[in-house]
Length: 436
Image (cartoon, rainbow, N blue to C red; front, side):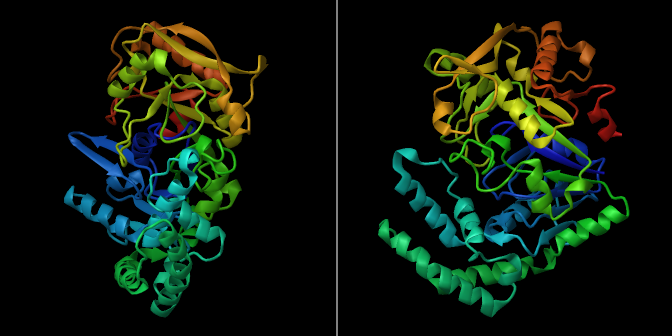
């Protein structure tokens, strides 16, 4: 069994908790794209783990984790996270963590170029995390990237750094920054590469062999569908493919080996950074947005940036379900809405007075959208920690059913809080089968 977990909105849907919940039922957890620009928060008792590069399954003893070829890895950030986990009692060894030899490295000049790119765009900036993710993927597409395997060959690493830095420094200096030195970068990266060496393997072969002996594999993405470079709100997107199709490429597995796709959705929507957000709560709804932000702790786990908050967008989520082929959805943070008198759900869009029920490709159209809402009554009672569907307030159950019907996908899991056990698994759902 190979299951892919996909964010169905703009990220921060709670993928970390769901992967953590499922990890006990799987043998291997693999990341397949992205870098350390998005954090997954996992709460276990009184401990909070913030994972940027490492799959959420690393917290579970005996589970093997993989960083796939579709990722871009900052080796310095990688070992900072490994050391941080060790300080929290989680030892990371080469037996437990495999790093693809084909993954690309984020270099110091990528971080510098990320800053200059945002400065150059001015008012049209993307709102990146400035961690070098985009420039690393640009080098990958431009066939000048440095892969993990390259970094393990000293003379090759040295020549690639010198070649790439000559071009990067032209841009860096143009924007008034000090040029970087190739010898300093080589010294830093070569030492980190040697420390990385024991973790490196051909991860696609490793996963293929695991599949042959019926190991259960969980594929974990970063970011989410509406940030996909092809299918998201371009150009305000990430630089990779977080969608289900990207999972096969980024992990190096045949598409037909994937047996299920789980979409993670919130009871409301959030977005970090720039870009269109049709259901965003603006000035007249800012008190509600602030309430949700505080109750939901809607601040980036890595960047600490406050997230923009909005109502659930059934049109965008249905689009995500179609793209990814969701078999089931996990609904998170229902408890955040406990105090609201009424809750809106976007069920359609209007552009220039014309009703549309599909997700537009043009970002200008997305900015002109007038959401068509249906308003549902709130439940005004606490759902935190509920573990049985029958114990949810009647209006909360109606809200869950309405979202499922609007997206036309079952909801198989409801998260009622950040802890592992604050979860409802719906009986007779596809999701329940994955938990067995």
